[in-house]
Structure formats: structure tokens, C-alpha cells
Length: 332
Image (cartoon, rainbow, N blue to C red; front, top):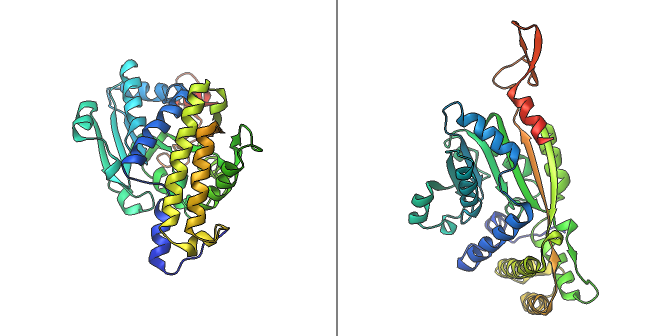
């Protein structure tokens, strides 16, 4: 379902980000990060730790970037895991909304730098240097159907050859409700949220981009269905808060936008929001499936004409696996 706008400025504003960036949104992002951590376990997969450790053993400090970092919870979890692994890394967080960043005291305490960055602006990427690991989580709310390729390319441009790209996304198309017949308001609101978020099949899109541009690509699926009931209830709170942010964002654009969502006016949308929130309070659980894509940036850019997978050892006369191939084996 397409959404038409009265002028170019309105369309630009609506395309930036469809969720909130205030204090309530920050609380939701912290909650969401905790739920995701429970689903995935450690935030840095074994292959990433192995890659970073190999860099550290050469006497270098690996560089890690988190784009769309928000309050920086992924980075704080990553810092804790790296300390346990004995890895000293440079961690940088980037987001379009600095208002979400943690306090300067916390940034200094964790030795993490936070900076403003627009994933759609190539010029900003050209000034931030190169990274050994690039991480993104839940950024589809800020990427329109026509913006995926450029956003992906911008992030890929600052990954070092041989570096790892990790992208995690919520898959709305695979969400499930514990009792759809009972929670009809949530089901109806879920369909509206799909339109508000301008969904364009995240799964096949990211799978294609990783497959076309990276090596040793993998895709893992996680779901809140596997969590204890306590965390499933917390996920219901998270979804209720996110729905409120989406509705408030759409409502700001008035009846013209709301009608394209299939409703008569903003008042009808707000009324549905109240019914949906009551459903969540009464026991509705919306299970959240998440996919994690990983891949290695080819070395071909630095060594044109040289095979990426293998190198030749003239002393032994045998083909020797490159370190990229070692990472590939860990990822697969």
C-alpha cells in the first residue's frame, strides 16, 4: 500500500524514521535489546570473536561499528563480552538521533564513542574510517523500499577487506499471535503497522544483498517462542510500546496519511491503539522472529586477480587456506 503526501518535505520527514526518539522510546529500546540478547545469547558470535582475537594477536586494536545504535545497549553488551575474551577493541556507535545516546559519563566509563550519522548519506561514511566488524540491528524502520541498496553499500564501504558484516532484523512477515481469534485488535493493528513501516520483504532483500556482495554468508533465525514466559510477556510490553510510537508518528501527518492506511481519520486510529494496548494487557503475545545475516567482505579489492579463498605457499608446494577461509569455515 503506497502513501501519498501533500509536499516533498512531508514525504521526506515521514521516510526518515517511523518510530519514536524520545525518553519513552529510549526505554523501549533498552527493553528490546534485553529481549534480543536473551534470544541470541551472546551478542558477538564465535566467528566474530575469532576474527577479532586474530587481529588482537597481531598487536592491533580491532575496530567495531554499530550503526543505528540508539542508547548503545548492543555496544555495552559487546564490550562486556570482549573483556571476558581478553580483547581490547575500539567501539563506535552511530545514530541519526543523538538524543538517544547514553550520558557522556557512561560513554567514558565504557570507552565507547557515539557520533551522529545518517545511513543514507555517503559523504558522512567517507569520514569515519574503516572497521573490522560492522553491526546493524532493527534498522528497517528507517529504510524505505527504494533505499536498501544505497544504505547497504554505504555500510559496506567502511568495512575492511576481510571484515565481517552482521545485520539483524525483525521479520514482521513471520510474526505470530498466540490466539489470533481472541486478539483481533492486535491482528488488525499489526497489518496497519506493516503499512506504516513501508515493508518490502526484508528477508529476501537482505539475503540477496549479502549473497551478492559478501563471502561465507549465513542466516540464522531466532524467535521469542523459545523464551520463558517472563520474557514473552516482556516482549508483549515491547510491542505495545512500539505500536504506540508508530501510531503517534502516523497521526502527526493527519487524516491524509491515515486514510491511506484504510481508516477514516486519526481518531479511529487512536481508538484502535487503545483497544490493541488493552489486548496486550489482557494476555496477547506477539512472537518476534529475528534473522541474523553475516558475511565476510572479499579481499579481492585489495588483491585484484588473486584468489580470495586460497593462497599458494611456494615453499611447501601446497595450497594454503587464507585466514578469510578460516572465518568462512567458522561461519558456515
